[in-house]
Image (tube, rainbow, N blue to C red; front, side):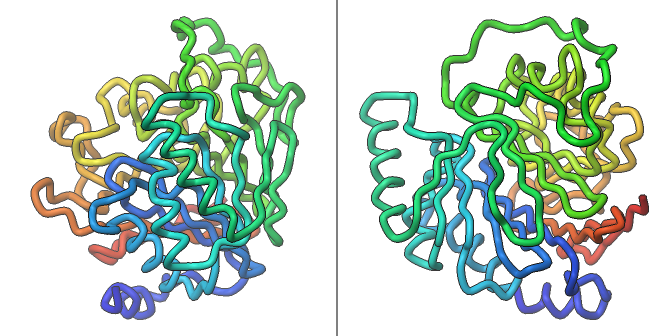
Length: 333
């Protein structure tokens, strides 16, 4: 980690003051996205898996230390699946968490879901618990964090920049209703000045289309964190292409996510300049992976837990850095 820090300093791409910085942490096909506002406040979306000898909690804590954080101000749990909420107790033992944000009680029942939710509830006793619904805001100082989906509901009125008719509606047929926690994911739009980034957790195919049909209620974004790790259960062109991201980040694992149909939808999105991946996707082969410099973990056999870093300015310009190979690219508005 120290070598990565020094490399970023030498490159001049270490996140600087007055920027919005995002660490896309590798939790092997789960999610852990650490955001630091220009104010210094932090928001972590999900915590990866439990177990694995504290692997995911250690990686998040290391990223937080690299970012100079002493605490997590807001932990947003998109939904109650183990690859998103499993790591909460382990992380809470390593770094203070001030606010625990979610969509409300777990809608799945049974021994495993009940145990998972109970462990999460025990962890939030150390901070303040907040339940959100579409239209709410998460009060991270220096950022505008809008909840656009939660607990199976979505926003009904356009956000700033949204509301235009979506000509793609109808091309991606609706699928059977998903009754799992995935469809209840808490999705957010994060805005810093002219920069906009969307994170929908594992929101599913039909629910995503509610956000953009018949009108695109969200508007265009600069960065799209691929929904559901780039799995074909989510991410129809109806939403991805109308969001018109300049850059997409795929938080996949080597053998989870980045399915070929979903990867192709993102890769072919109109106006997309680059797609970055946390892992080389084994099933995709050379034809359905980006080139090595845009992949944090290209080695299928020896994963090192490498991450990606984004640093955005209020004017809409942003830089994505791959600390593994010190490759960085800047995208200007």
